[in-house]
Length: 244
Image (tube, rainbow, N blue to C red):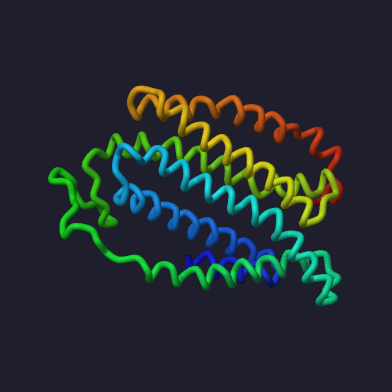
């Protein structure tokens, strides 16, 4: 969480080098928080309730993103105007500063957590790897990690440029762009809640996972075709051929 806050502050100078390092740090910090959160929640929930619990947890995160997207851009734009900040980047600087400050304040929540794990939680057949990670079935872990790695690789290539494309193609300001992605967050929230209900009606955890993950494939294909129209993208790119 500290790395995320530092990364957000690093965006403020606006230099390409700082932004590159900040993007890497932001992604790394976000993933570290997420990787820790999932097993922590799993340890503090019963197996029979985890499906619904994780769905509600994810939905709450998307609802928060929805509210933040709707209010954040508008508030940042208004504050920049009241401070007589006229540059095009001023609303972004105000928004990033506010989020970074809240990121630092949120570190206090970490100190409210207590260590209630048993003295030894290692599986008897597990072996310590180079980084001290206990892995009892390396082949299974690889199968679990590979889909997530491929998905994350694609998302990392798409999401940052999707924001730029929406802004450039439709000539939207910060508040309008945030509103567009707020609608996206709302759709994601509804999909998560619906997936939890659909998964509960399937026999077994594996069947539930296959159903939910498989149902997302058509939407990913549609998104890929929409954003992969290179000719259409270039013909409508407003910033000049040198930045394509």
